Image 1 (tube, helix red, strand yellow):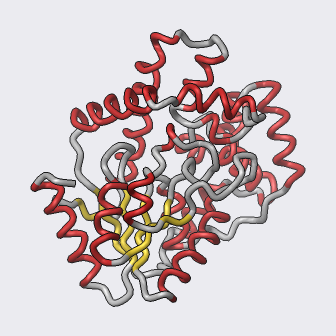
Image 2 (cartoon, helix red, strand yellow; image 1 turned 180 degrees about the vertical axis):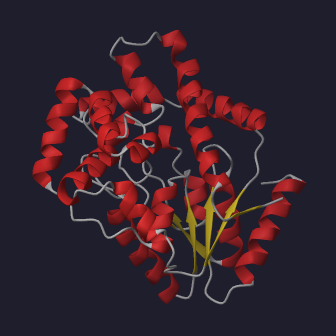
Length: 305
């Protein structure tokens, strides 16, 4: 981070941390907006450690297309919850929040400052404010949903959710099998939609003294950053990474359906032309970034510089 705007953002973030007695700085924002670079620089300046809130970076092997911290960034600042679980292991906001809470408490116990960084906003909210007290997971229902999605398609499963919980269906993407399944599960077990549980909870009880910050990024600038990053990742061997993961039996991994990985996989399966790959990844990433910006517009976030 070398520009005057970047330096200003760092100084603002540092001022926020220093103004709080036991601070947690949560750096959020859309993909490609510069979260990791800011987090590493701030952590380096204050002796902090970073807790990743990225739903793809947490998996081993999904490296290039998730934008995992580089070796140089890892050397500059310790990171937690990056590449720590098997791609076939289940992971959701509640499970992640348990691990993140342990990491935050450990960092503080050693006299360091925790910095949460990532674009999986539900995970950040789960850590800082907890989750609605909905029922525990039901393996039987989840297995039924998986069979249905595999036979009828994820869009059909999402249509079932739309019938019983249109509010959650509007918020969730049809390809987000885990959350769609969870919302259907809660409706079946309680007779109440997940959206009602979440509205009742309201994320009103803070578990930590935290400040959410984000870097401003105009749509045109963000698009340019996304395009440059996609080109860089493809040149770095993203396609080969996906081919290797598929050869290891990771085709059913949740992360394989994420933005970017889904398009690369489609290309390797002959469902997408190679010369259209970059354009399709950029298009899907821009759509994802728009959803992230919508969340930011409704959150209590401080925009830096």
